[in-house]
Length: 151
Image 1 (cartoon, rainbow, N blue to C red):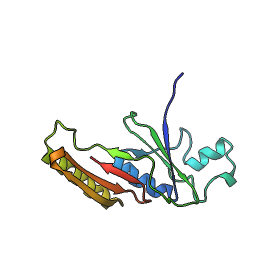
Image 2 (tube, helix red, strand yellow):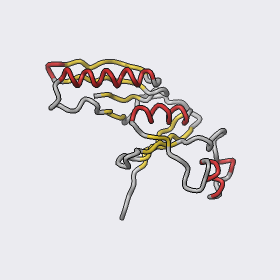
Image 3 (cartoon, rainbow, N blue to C red):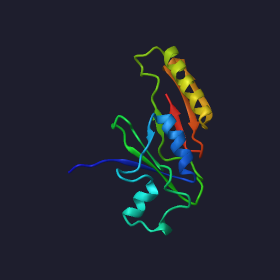
Image 4 (spheres, helix red, strand yellow):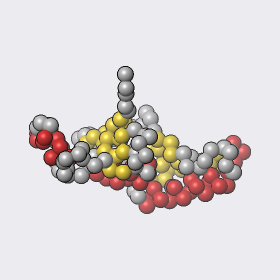
């Protein structure tokens, strides 16, 4: 049996999350299925009632995909309630290159990514600089407050 995996993230502003996480993950907004000019046109064609679509949805993607086809599709599902507690899961963006890469080079790579993601709307929570443990990482939040790490 073949299986694919989709990560669904509840949020209040799918388009903002698409923009941020496309930048963070190197993904691209998912184009509508073949033959459809927008997601709304696709949903209408398959019979999704207008009442089930969030207001303003469908003209821009609410999902992102890995352009190389390796990672899972990520769908940002609009929900009415805000995030209220710490995530039970989080992304680790592994940009440093692993322990075979010198710590100073990993730190520069992490710092460059942190700066890029702050520009894109993330918030830096703290830097974990522990040279004795061979660790340099950053704890961050995306635009809606979801925690993630850059290592």
